[in-house]
Image (cartoon, rainbow, N blue to C red; front, top):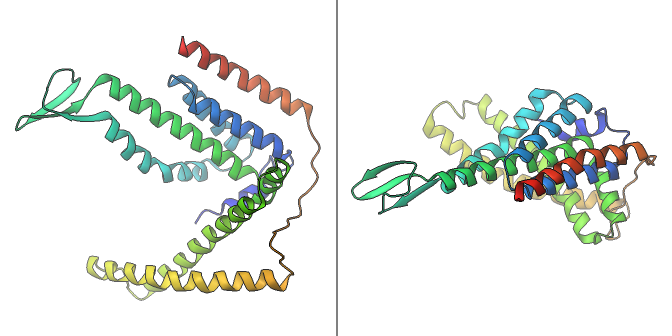
Length: 257
């Protein structure tokens, strides 16, 4: 399983101020989501991919494997937008009529679906840029400086932590079942999968209790405090961010006209 944390701590951009990386990721994501055309998301996707692979030094296969995770959800979403069902066959670009119902694609719906797909994919890549180059503790520090309520940042830390606990526990149980031929046939696979989920719930609950006991033993008072490094603020990076974002914003404005 991909360990995002290991790349967040060991990438080539680890010495860059987390506020600068967060600013770049958030502004780029907003510009991508507000784009009226498909050109800006494509540029954002290429820009972020280059930043992750070339600048941060994250292996390309890792980045593409991560991008495959939301791809299936996005495809299902855009297909529901692209395809239409109607009793009126007029207006369809590609269609097939079955028993009086026309199933097909209208050209405006296809354009909307493609734009939505690219905007979503570009926004996800921005989030991956932040996750792969900035440790969670540094993101929390940035949020604290922005006066985000402590309860929200603590929930973020706990949820982020338990994502990896959940994956690690599930992988361990799956390996134990596979070594005992738990997935040798379809029928046995369904049975093993149901047992995996039931065992997973109990084990995660136990681990959550262990985590709370460990925090209480370290004088937990209702606020998780993290130690972060002090990073120098780089004027060059802010100029670079401005130089990258302004053309994208202008491109969006021209696209609206």
